[in-house]
Image 1: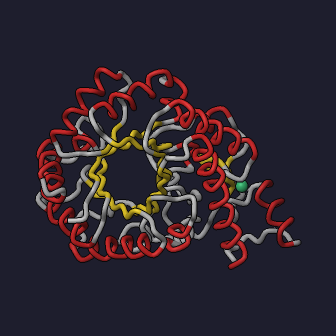
Image 2: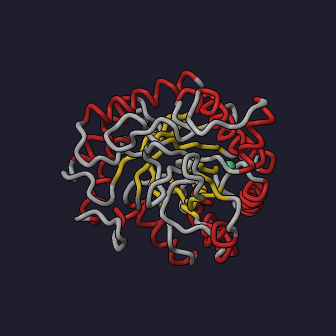
Image 3: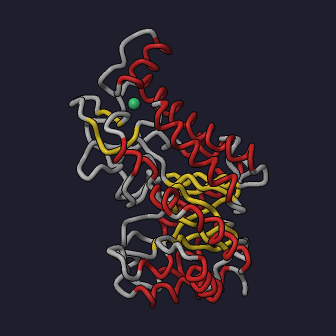
Length: 342
Ligand SMILES: [Zn+2]
């Protein structure tokens, strides 16, 4: 078995002594790593305790990765955004209807400054193993703002229009032409390139991960969220771990998991990155809890080196809880034990 790392995401606890108990539980469930999902509110309000929580996890031998969870709603996740609360400008604007949406435009100097300061703050204070770009995407103008396809798209704000016109010498079209698509992908890449370089200038040893949304399942239909070309993402020189996100359909066959794992591993190897796959253990998934074991085995057999699951205790106590969260959490722990060869 090639699996070297097993982990879960973790959030909502901001007392180091309480988190320490949960880290012990993670170790008992054969986790070797934890992804600290940090909302803007956490990073603002609970900031003094974040490095201490990282330290507690490290003391217990866990690898710690910091997830800029839901920041600006540019990244995936449920948390609200302080940036959006404080800025009625600097939002992504839909191309066809010209409506602002609840997502920061990452091409605006205001959001770039905010996001990079936040990355710098984490890098300077936290003795973690790395930083994690969680499902970055252009917003799709549906309600609630998500990342599925519609006829409309973002972003055609004044800043994006100006940047496009500077590069191409004509007004940014309202349709997704090939040039618009290339422009969006380039801009999507630039912001995370800057953030990765900044993090590594402070912590050269940090591993940078981008977790990309899958474009090959029954749920995520769009290929135009800015990061849908997996090969392009895998090739980014600043990245160390090539990660692809969970399959959110609850009953896709094992073959789908296998195909995604094999593609992830092939691209990671081609560009000398560590391959990472995610297992969904929350909400309705999987319908058959024992399927968690089979997914983990398939990942291990495919050569995945880092396996993570969303989330700790299968979301117990949240709206995302699995129907039998503790059973799902126990099964995940047993699956981790097996793939680690323990
Ligand atoms: Zn914009």
